[in-house]
Amino acid sequence: MAQARLLLFAVLVAAPVAFALAAPPTAATKQGAAPAKPAAATNPYRPNRFAGKAGRYYKLVWGIDSLTVKLAESGEVVRFSWRVLDPDKAKALNDKKLAPELVDPQAGVSLSVPSMEKIGQLRQSASPEAGKSYWMVFSNKGRFVKRGDRVNVVIGGFRAEGLAVD
Image 1 (tube, rainbow, N blue to C red):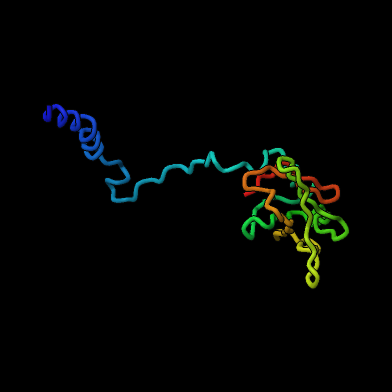
Image 2 (spheres, rainbow, N blue to C red):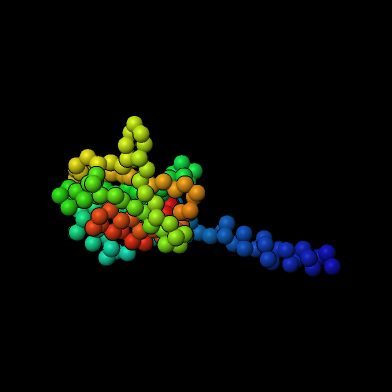
């Protein structure tokens, strides 16, 4: 009985390991070069920022790209950031007169940009420059917005829908 178990172990465990160790070396390892790295696979668990057409829309109509929504300060605030490509088109996002809001339809909440006594609103409002990134922070008191939620950001006529929260 013990010999049968040992034979079964050899067939199931040891044989595949020995076969893998005896595999012939590749051309890269024969010449002393480092083995080629496998192609970078996409992470299926990472949420898509937005579809390709939406990305082109933001570039053409609003002059921005790299839209991100992230939780910060242990989830107490949500940071929305973007990179400016065309400053003339992106002016609306930095306009102080417009009241931005972040809407989470799943949680049923609408978050606003908080205003501090001595600092003012927690957002950048300088005139945009090409190639620079800008941000604004939304208060998430009660932590209703969670990582993985899809949210909408509305600033005047600008509307970004379905952004994944990182």
